[in-house]
Amino acid sequence: MRRADRLFLIIHALRGRRTALQARSLARTLGVSLRTVYRDVADLQLSGVPIEGEAGVGYVLRKGSDIPPLMFSAAELEALVVGTRFVRAFAGTRMGEGAQTALLKIEAVLPAELRARAVQTRIFAPVWRDRHQSDFAAMIDRLHAAIGCRQVLRLDYRDEAGRCSAREVEPLCLAFWGGAWTLGAWCRLRGAFRSFRPDRIEASEPSGEHFLDTGERNLAAYLRVVGVGPADSG
Image 1 (cartoon, rainbow, N blue to C red):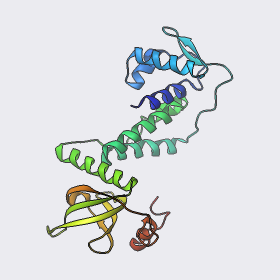
Image 2 (cartoon, rainbow, N blue to C red):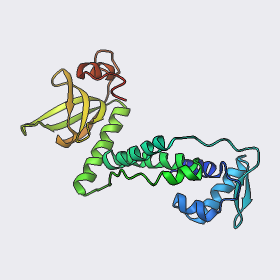
Image 3 (tube, rainbow, N blue to C red):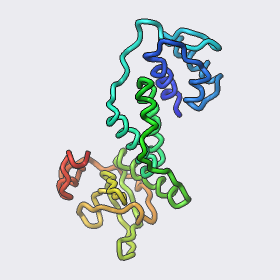
């Protein structure tokens, strides 16, 4: 976990509390040592965050500095928890870690009753990673990163019939259809939009070139071609 995320979680864990929160409890929640918690709290105090207390006693936010917690219904909270579980199970490693950190931040500002509800949902998406699954998660991470920086990719791609071809593509989006991922892209070989299955990509590497967001072959144009509107794409 990044230090910035850890500091954020410490602040939000203290919000809304009337009693001091023990450093040991913070250390368990964050998965760090007591020494790290003491150092982080001291740094927050030096930066002006109104935290009162000390090691061995616990910490609270100074009276008058509190803000109301985020309010979720039970159904909204369950949707967030289940969504996080699915992202961790089926998306790339980096996105899964981001989803888990986001959920920790949300839980940190919830009232105790709703926080308890967060772990009671009975919809699961077990995270199972053999070597093949780990390689696939790494592939999703690479494709996601290429989309973010508009990096042209060179692919060795195997179609449904098993035929292999070399493609140079401008990656635009990733879509999960409940059983398979697809990469939406402009294919320079075909001169048209194509959807590629990441599990059929034998190899991928950046070309070193970045593409421009042009009107005729950007994400909005791709979604129109495949018949997906902005609302449908989330």
